[in-house]
Amino acid sequence: MAYPSSISRSNVHFWIYYLSLSLFVVSLSTSRFLLTVSIVLLGVNWLVEGNFKDKYHRFCNQKAAGAFLLMFGLSLLGILWAHDRMFALQSLHHKLPTLLLPLVLLTSPALSKKQIVGLLVLFTSSVVVVSFIGLGIRLVDNPVDFREASPFVPATNFSMLLIVAAFQLPLLVRQISSKRIHLYLSLAVSGWLVFFIVYLRSFTGLASLGGALGYTLLIILLYHKNRWLKAAFAAGLIGVVGFLVWLFLFMYNLTHSQNDIDFNNLPRETSYGSEYKHDVSNPLRENGNLVYVLIADEELRDAWNVCSTVPFDSLTRSNESLKHTLYRYMASMGLPKDKEGLSKLSKADIVAIEDGYTNYLFLEWPGLYNRVYQLMMGIYMYTSSNGASPSWSTFTERFALWEASLESIKTRPVFGWGTGHVERAVEYGLNKNGSVLAGNNLRSHNQYLSLMLLWGVLGFTAFLAIYIYIVMRFRVCRAFPFTIFLIVFAINGLVNDPIEGQIGQSMFIFFTLFYCYIYPKLGRAQSLFSA
Image (cartoon, rainbow, N blue to C red; front, side, top):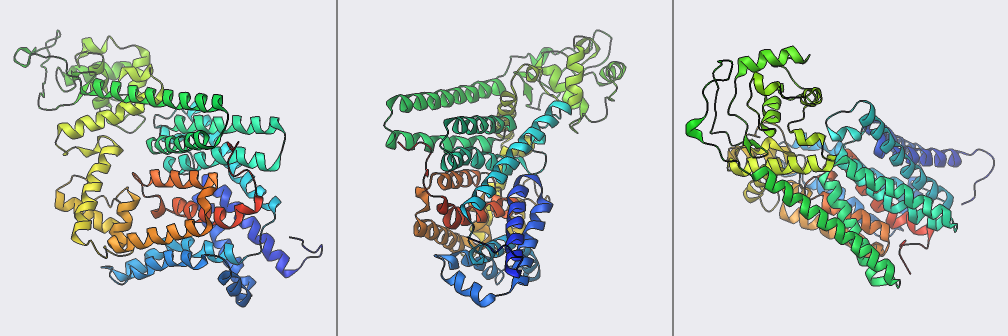
């Protein structure tokens, strides 16, 4: 698209639009505040520009444009049966990207190929830069929580951005350059992004990555003629899957192991004469050893406060109870929780406990091992307590939230609870199930359940029908990067509700619009692995 060299009103509005869009794609991985600013700029510029008659005709001439407005229409319709209609109306501001992005993108001047490439370069570059910033934070500050490696947005959202960027970059390079060195460099960058997904230790990110790689293998097996490439990729994927199966089974056996203990002959006193406390009813174990036996609190407190600057009755650097962290760490080594047991800890052990590590093996294992262990420990405590202790991991918390969501859906199955009332519906289910999670204003952490809670089975079916219509109307699943994007969202939605948050919703609407209306202008290289 050519622009006059002189400054005109339409020219100014176009470049405000493009710069706001540039800020939008950068902000997805860097700042929720700037993401809001970019959306506001897009909306204000669109309104000030005027020309609504032309925009109306432009919108009507776009294929399936009205389907995007129907998505927002479901939120409007859901106000009618919401318990608190004023609250439901106020909650609509969270859904503004669903309304605003289609109106602006589908009625604004078309972008040139160079401008489309510029948006993709900015998006990918921002994701790469943030990954290095996250790595720097982990190396310098060494926070215990792996999620700190995603410094600006939630780790679950960032893992989705990492996957989209990793699979999009080589395709983009193939579209704009014929030099092999550029393709190899892009593959190296994508390899780094894949590594960082593993480094983040987000199970939803890893599951989404697995889905994306599985689809890629399917494309190679179906369409590529090089048998060596097919065999190598299949062998690599089978090796990764085999390793993960082994890892999960190993951690399951470790967290569920139970070392024999003679409850009738537990010692009553330490070698220093202090009395032991034994809570044999608590099932928590570390490496098969019961945690809450052989505890001499006063003796251990005095000994700990001599060797550490972090008081016994305070919190670790990860904001967990230090003494309970100490109990678990010493139990993992098979030590009694007394002065003599503490004397067997090294300086590295003391620092690890201060940082919040609950098992000495965490110092020896790669980070992914620790994450899988924590997941399996959560499952062990959840099943051992018959579901009464869901808070041991975010994964087991989701079990309770899903049960509560299903209970609420059964109460209002047809139309749901209304717009803005997901938390209210989940709270109802938690209270009905007598869950300890009640009172925390939680969401369902499942996108499919969230949609049914909002609008019932009818609204959920309508939403799926609208989106499937859009996908079929554009045949956009033929574009490899869109399918990757869709797989990422579909898998992430099983354990999260990304569309209910600002970043996830903005990603979902923008990339759907982008791959339907904007990306096809680049042409060719729809799949990196085409023969």
